[in-house]
Image: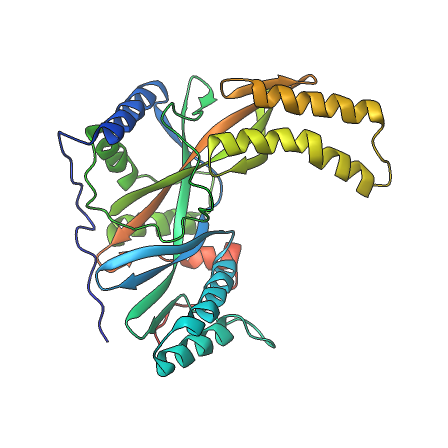
Length: 322
């Protein structure tokens, strides 16, 4: 069957009157754009999969480090979904696709798009960036909150480029439309593919951010842990001291002393009690960095992996349809 094209893929719906929460978030974004004036890539892209039903595209799962990992996630979802599928033929097709993406023997089929019943499944590519200014990366915003309990991996998140936005989100999305990797930091092939993506997927949808805790060592910022919310990131940093360090020493065969454990527990308590994005404990400095995420969209929906993604992050393959 044929699937509808994505309505409004190259459209930004700017409105003057947002609801109060959305308006406050847009003002926060404006404050940050004026303070943190540059865009900085925040590591390799993430991969996941999205599902189209009718004109709607929704995210199934994200967080894979390469297209191959996203295919395994899709295979697991297809197997689970086949158990609840009422149409036997569709259920069989879901299981057959899962068996090709995650076979018991042999290699995974490197296929990034499947049409099964009235749904289309696609492996998607998500770019990460952060705002930077005055030699600092953007911390959490005042309006940032932790996701609801139980929410995970952007599951069921609607990909809707026509959602009403304020002037500052519109400005950021326009800035991102032509955003390219920093020259000299990636191979020329990657630059060429990025320029091609601007033509094939000219729309940009902003996704909920993630948060990375970095350790500041002079001029270097080393990632340590992270989470989907700023409060969660703070807690993960505290648990690094109270839980991870003791386990790490025990695994290495050198159990921590009672004095070290007491010191680490005290550090964890102080981190949980501190306000602001920076933490200084035990002669070490940490900072929570806001990592923004974007998804390119085009006439036929969200962008899938690029050829260089297959080569750099996973097995090489071409997209095809069943």
